[in-house]
Image 1 (cartoon, rainbow, N blue to C red):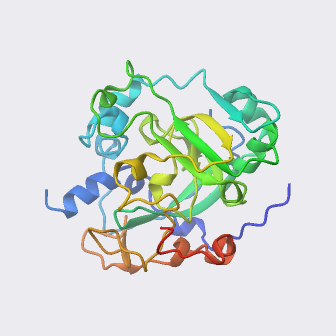
Image 2 (cartoon, rainbow, N blue to C red; image 1 turned 135 degrees about the vertical axis):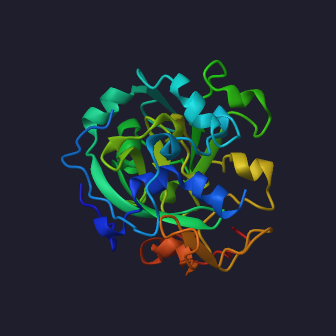
Length: 302
């Protein structure tokens, strides 16, 4: 299919793999406290201001609360997650509801390399080379009905494999949602890999959503269910803190989080003492997605 997305980033802009996977370690220090269709690995940028971490450091810090809230917990516990076999339940307002085997999905999809900015609600950012396919192509397999207006997503919930769900940090399972036009936009992908390797368990294996103009928590990990609906679905962080995390969660430097500014960001891989950069509206993708929100008050619909 023809793709309308435009990329202004190159491999040289990519956050180094070690910096991506160790981002939580870097944030902590600053505070003072399968993959298919990939033809080649992507060369990553280097940054002499940061010393590469060893493998243990790279994989020891992650924010996947189902495996625990301490930063070392996901790396310690995520190996318990069984990612093969894997299937995704697609239901609701679709013509062909059912359980779609991951291998069957991958056999039908065109895997592409997408180099995207990632902006976290915590005011750090990076550039990530993802590998995956457009969500629109997966939804087409199921056949979206005319009455559908929203797409709901759900993360796998396996208490026997996920020790973090013993604690009510969030209302499990983790859920997210998009408006249908957002879900069908060519920028919206289901990622199966990054940096030329399959996504590690603690980063959302084997299949995660990536919506580059929204804050990172919208990009739900380890997806097992997708539901087409005519009503706006609940989302986990909005349920936990509706004043802090809206349904849309578009990157917007003009709307601060109640506890910190969103006007600037710190690029992971730029050094612990690097200066902050101005945050771009829609994370720099406004020329492609701003029209989705014509006429909306983006301060009210945050």
